[in-house]
Image (cartoon, rainbow, N blue to C red; front, side, top):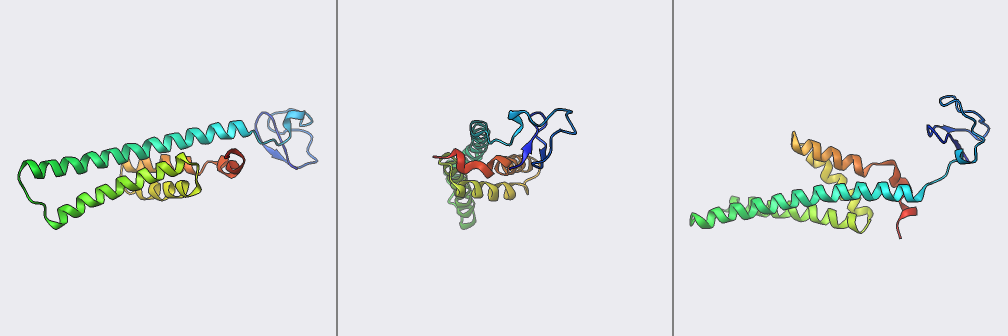
Length: 154
């Protein structure tokens, strides 16, 4: 079992007695490595919540854009060509994928996390707003607390 400093969280071997960074004794009972399940659960809940909001926002914007484009074509009495239908279908599919990822995160499923990572990587291409949203999604999905996620679910 490793030892960890209660102040700076630096890991040490079992035989260590003193934290070099904080100048405190590691023999304190709180300094042993303990997994704070409640803290991990709160952190993951915040990460999931932020990522779900991003997915819902992007899905909503896609649905609004699809409805807007379709409404313009109806208002102008314009029949849609094949490529215009393809654009509407692509927007709808993107919205569905974001909703699916948010649903997977709501259920605390690993596939929701992996789908979010894939979407985050894809969003990095869309400079500048997509890059920012993609970075936030990826950062939330690669938090170190995910290692202990099996302790927090169910």
